[in-house]
Image 1 (spheres, rainbow, N blue to C red):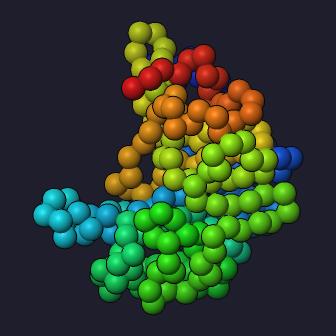
Image 2 (tube, rainbow, N blue to C red):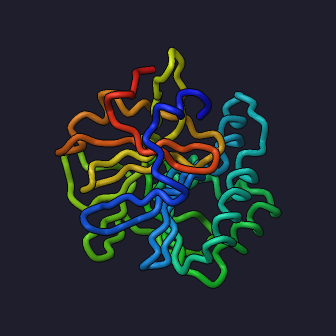
Length: 237
């Protein structure tokens, strides 16, 4: 976060976020950890985005899937979750699972082994990925928490979603940094995109307007920690 980070309100090595009374840990890798449920949530993996673009003649380095799965594997080894929830757009299109290389498919199957795996349906991948284990749901409810892909259009207590790829530009000492972030107001939360080729949408964009009943905070991803940032230091762009 460099110089601009000096103007952020650092929350320490473990950044805890409350959602409707449930305490969750925001991880600097962009995932969410729920200790009480041993649940790891990630949003917008967009696996096989590179191969999807290649089919349309736009060539991207074909390494997004292996990079995304490698990052996810590190978290799974660290936390050993009982459940993994992928919050939609796990594949960039419905044919993405079929385009995986044998090596990448084997890596994903290995990550799934011995745990519950929930595929939340996304707008890019509304159907269960072909040939892969796991349950495909429109929404998962656990207690007061509801996991879904696209945020509801109006404030919705207990909702955890993805889809919008939130990012924040943070100003300080005449400079600014732009990083993916979580964004929430204590009653609902939107996760950053986890995929290697996923972009980001500034949280001050009008797409976020009306989502939160109370002033929101951005929880900005740093190298080794997550920074809780007040709206007053956020900038457009």
